[in-house]
Length: 379
Image 1 (cartoon, helix red, strand yellow):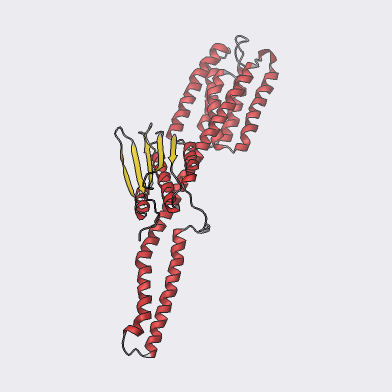
Image 2 (tube, helix red, strand yellow):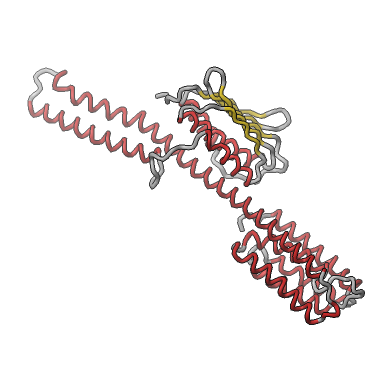
């Protein structure tokens, strides 16, 4: 399961302990169940928590079955006691629902919730003298809240997974772009020199025989052909196979969508943008810088509030600043390569801009960049 980890296991263990202890006391004091039977029923009600992370549907079914067993064994001391959904049955069942809402296909959530109501209704008709409609209505509301909460957790986990995938994909593209730049600087330049020198050789050198001149011409043609193939290869490296290389690139107008995606992933972000439209290359660099900064905040400062400011200065340059507060809890282990900050500097530097990265007093972090008005790339 995408979000399962040590924290989830500890939480489920705590709920299981609560179910056993509180459930046993509840059955003994309020439902006239003997000590041994009360303990056995409480252990059964806690058992689905042991498999819910691996088999959420099975745990859901088992949890309903144990609730029925507990209800049939219980004899309320007073009519005020909840029945057939006993108080001691709720912690484990609600925990199972939260986990199931994360791991079970969404199309099964409402039918599963309705099945729980149906089971409670059937048990209620078996002993109407014990019945308490509150004992059916309140669990129905609580179970709906548990499923909704689990679905929110699922959405956050999916958004985080999407950000991780995008970060990995961006790392691959940045590496390919770096290779393309190096090939352009070294190989393509060398091939151009070969072409020029081969073309000019018959004119620079004296008494070149016709056969030798023809050989120089073939060398120049081969170099030109290789150079053209090299340029096509660089185009593929700079783009992504199967994508439209002429598709519009993200810019300043796409920042609100990027920020909203980060919010869904659990990053409290506030965006302030007073920037005018800029050169497409500048807007793309600003977008990628904010994207990388938000990804870093998600990885290294979980729970920290993030402030994104994008503004156009009087000289026409674009100022981008992303700051985050200290993390509210320790970050999870991360296997990122650490190339993001390097790629950020390279991208801004190619456009003639500057980037300032560093920590803030109190444990926060700031990324500040200045991008020139013109987006002409340096060569």
